[in-house]
Image 1 (tube, helix red, strand yellow):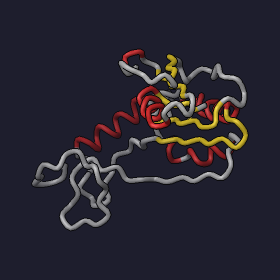
Image 2: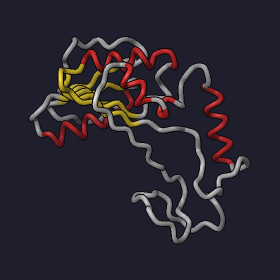
Image 3: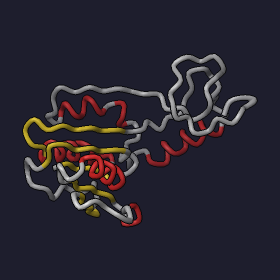
Image 4: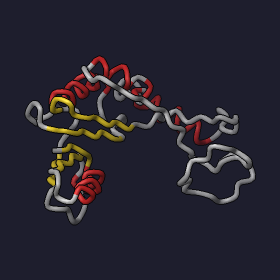
Length: 182
C-alpha cells in the first residue's frame, strides 16, 4: 500500500496496474482527477493534523510540495507520522522546493522581480510556514527515525540557460529568446 498526493497517486496507480493499492491525500476536492483506476482511493485530509492511518500501514510514502502548506510547528510531528505509518523496511520519498530564488551567474539581482517576489513570499509566511525546511529536511528525517537517507539539492531552472552553459536540465518550459536575464 502506498500513500501519495492526488495526481501523483493517479499516475502511480496507473503505472502499477492493480499490483498495489494506492491512497492519495489532498486538501482540495478540486485537485481530484476526474477518472481514477480501481486500485486508487483518494482522501481529503489536512496534513497539519495527525495522520489517521494505523501504524505500519504503508510500504511507500511520497510527500511532495507541502512546505508552503505544513505549519512550521507541525514538521517534526509530520515526519514522525510518516515514520509511524511506514511498515518496517518501507520507503519515504520527499520532494520540496526551496523558494529562495537565486542565480548561479548573477543575473538574478536583488532588484529583479523574481528575486523580490521570492523574498516577499518567504517573508510573508515567516513564523507560520517553514519555506526553508528543504535545507534541513535530511536532518529532520534522521531525527524522526528514518535511516539510510539520501538528500539531493537540484537547481530548478526558472529561465532559459545562458548560451554555452553546460549541465542543462531538460524540460525548461519557456525557451523564448531573452535579451537579458529572465
